[in-house]
Amino acid sequence: MADVTAKSDVQKEGEARVDAFRKDLGPFVVAAEKSRMPMVFADEEPGHPIIFANDAFLALTGYEREEVLAKSFQSLLAEGVDAETMPIVDAAFRGECENDPEVHCKRKDGSEFWAKMFVSPVCEEDGTVVQQFVSFVDQTKHQQDNAQCKMLIDELNHRVKNTLATVQSIVTQALRHPAEPAAIRQAIESRLMALSQSHDLLTSGNWEGAGLHDLVDTALHPFKVVAGHAERFTIVGDNVHLSPRTTLSLAIAFHELATNAVKYGAFSNDAGTIRIDWTVVEEESGNRVLIHWLERDGPKVTQPKGKGFGSWVLERGIAHELGGKVTLEYLTDGVACTIDIPISAGLAE
Amino acid sequence: MTGLLTGRRILVVEDEMLVLMNVEMVLEDLGCTAISAAGSVAEGLSLLAQQSFDAAILDVNLGEQKSYPVADKLTERGIPFVFSTGNGNHGDRSDLDDRPMLKKPYLTEGLITVFEQLIADMPMPTAA
Image 1: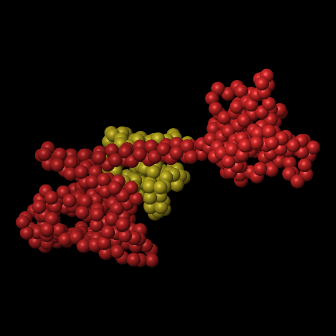
Image 2: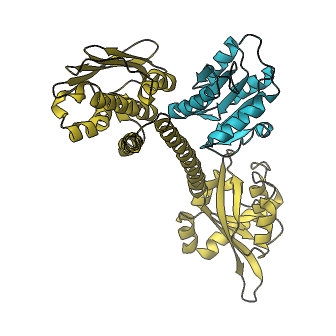
Image 3: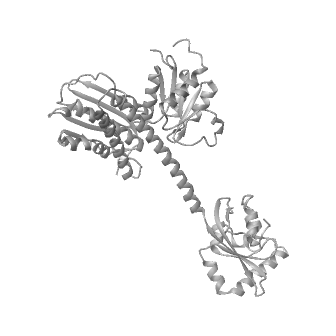
């Protein structure tokens, strides 16, 4: 761009036209200057020198007024646009564009924006084009929204496919060992319900995570209501904030512990109780939460014969997915499970 | 009972625990007793630094990460592998397009067929 301090004759002539334009149009110029829509007037001659640029145009492009006045519109635009844009702009000035072109431009500082460009010729009475009026609608937000939308659809697709793979795993596992169809259906349904409820919990918190207390309440709710066991649960601990991933994994873990308790453990008789408590352990390497599940007064516990879905989730799955340590002990007095996992600090609101 | 993967060492890189469970079950049914699982790129690379494998299955997306550093290390070591993904293609890593790819959810038969192909040309390890 030419040095603005040393003015050529051409520039001086251009500026004289700018002044004349302002005088001619009077109050319209003031209105245009303050309009929120970026706009310029350019003379109808080679290069289309700009004779008017309003405040909104300067705000959009980042230029000072003296940097654009009397400059060729095309050359100003050419500072930043990509190769496809200039022929579109030239065609628009010739009136050969059927649709209003959307152009990709650069601001003075190099940052990029998309704008829809409206070019209208200003004609004299005999139809001779004397000026071009160009206005812009900044499409940056629109483009960003589109990009965001595409990203969300991709992410949604990814999650749906992973969820289907998870469901496949739940179904396959349930069919792995011989069992009554009713028992298979019950095993599959209750796990799907557990997954669904933890999704609801995360959705209510904008998928930013959930509180551990809320999670325990949600995961154990079906067991409290169905079996009338509410008073036999003791739950002690703060509403420690958990990531979405930790929330989903722990929800399955609690579901499996509670299912086992109803079938074989503390909730399989009328007297058993379950205590769930947790503490946050602060360490230099990061915080951890230490969760205890302890069953009491149920029937005498015997070691399970085989390893099923629940013990796999607890002993292998949680450790794998959350980088934690889980111990599951079938003590004679009741099942005891300790889950030790890393968490990011803080309490849920 | 001797199966397709008896005596083989398989690396599974997968961050979703229930998906991992399914893969492990299938591999165990094929006779594999040496399955190592990693849930992140760091874990995958660490396992590769410690031992050798006959084949691997890699989930492309591991949370915020892509498993490509593990894929590159496997390529360097000449260990055959298959990708699994819930998404479309490899984007700017089109050099990986010729690797087998299982799109989640996939059929158990599909997983078995891929492993049959992966280990077809691999000699059995001398120490099983």
